[in-house]
Length: 61
Image (cartoon, rainbow, N blue to C red):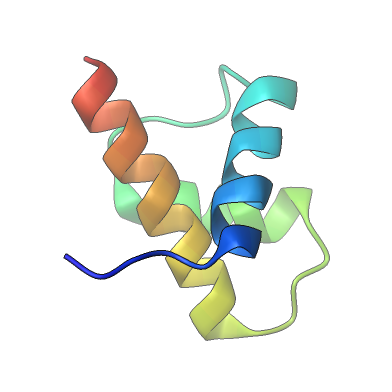
């Protein structure tokens, strides 16, 4: 497993704190939610954040 950049972790944690009910264990849903809640234009960064959030939620359950 690769080490995630700090900006991915920081943004993921902020989104999960501000919108705890907006995310679930489905990557596609989280990807769309990250796109709606942020102004990130890069598709790869958006996907990394969505993947990080998905992973965190799956391990918390």
